[in-house]
Image (cartoon, rainbow, N blue to C red; front, top):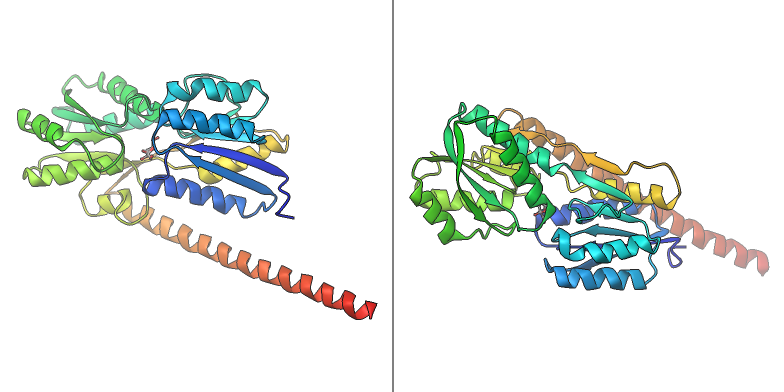
Length: 326
Ligand code: FRU
């Protein structure tokens, strides 16, 4: 019965803010709905590494069977995650990594590849010539270092492309406005911004628009979410030139976790695929994601029906027992 979970999974989540993290959790819950004997305990650290560190210790102390971590910043939580691993708790890193090899499995896309893809796309778009701005995620997040590293590395093949300014954001639409405005004013020749996620890309778009430069400056974001106001829609609206798909991987994380717990074979590195979403394929993407959403709703409805049937069956059994006993 659900009141006595067979497995307890602890989840140290860096934040529950924003549609991407919400999609991740929804994916986990969807997958868990097939496994009522598995309990998920999520602690949200509100983008605070100190808190996340304490929460990991709290989860270790509450005798979980497996730990999922999506670290806010890599370094500060590394010792806590290493401790869990040393104590024999399987550790699954989701989306962002720690600074250590002490983990059982990783699920997430390759951030270096994301950065490389952005650079190559920019090169093709600008025919190898232009001045760029890079809008980075939170320093210390492995996603930031990976995307930056991949972008810089791939740009070395294109000497005509030059990053003239770097601005650090915090993964949200609230990009440092005065800083980005100053950078764009200092470089009136800039024709492209690579933002490390779509939230910051949306913020950058609004600033470009305010400066009257939204036509001149092409923006590349990352995530490509299907929800309202997110990557796919932003590309359809031509606010973003492109978004690099970066799947939240909630379902995949739970599937891998269950394999680990069930002592089944599993892969240590589960790298989710990425792709460029731009005007050439955005309509197909939209149709595919719409179809997925409606299939997911069907599944949820069927599960509700099943639960109802089970409850009816259980009460009928009780009625049968009572009538036999009397
Ligand atoms: C959400 C998010 C995504 C980004 C990922 C990187 O918190 O910022 O937008 O792709 O985290 O880890």
